[in-house]
Length: 303
Image (cartoon, rainbow, N blue to C red; front, side, top):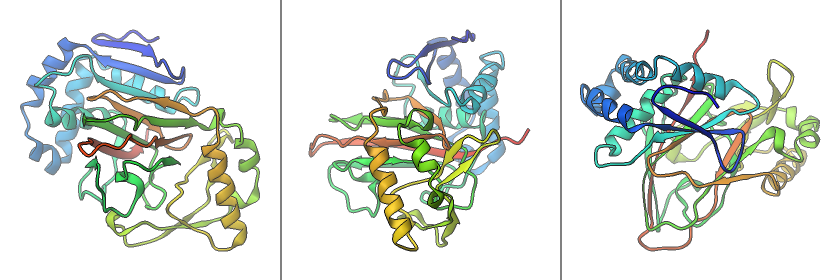
């Protein structure tokens, strides 16, 4: 494992492809003080200020963290890390976690505008009762494996999900699957239907008023499989596409190589969006259930 000042870096217990990064308390305390230079409004309204808080974080690790995070995400053998404070305290509250998430992502690339929230990040709750039009907030329904950004024009190289708070929760673990571990990847990737253009749309809550077209599978620069897929948003044009999507969905959910991991409160999972799929197990029913998440997704910096 890499040795970087101020960080505890280990292999995740659920998968050797996922790197766990804990920010030591001394660094966290320094960040609390530095982040206080800017309120959340400044972070939201001034894009350059987001890079300032990112530089604070990188400087405290001798400018090694940015290089390491980019290496992890671009490396096909890993492509995913979980990062958060070593210890959660009153000072590492929701505002701090928004700023920390902002700092981490701005060491990786440029976040997309999140139309659902109207800013570069989105915060949303999962609760007992829900009237939304997508699986995102439905606590007792399995969120099947998928990638983000399937229905938007922006490039979505990576995504971050930060767990801001959690109360009265059982279940709801994160499910992850790396394409190279998927038993059915070769079969589905080599099906010519997966290379056809599919139409992708989204429900009203996403605030995206257009549709896009792209295939499910495509190649990276080395000819390896990449995927852009979510079960709720494709509009099959014919029986062949409909049957392909059903086969794809069944093969993903039937994989025995899914990684099931519980994300600690205050931590964020960041993954390459083109060779990692993610989902969520159902929660155990509880009228007082509450989980708040933060989402940021975007593109890598162009070298």
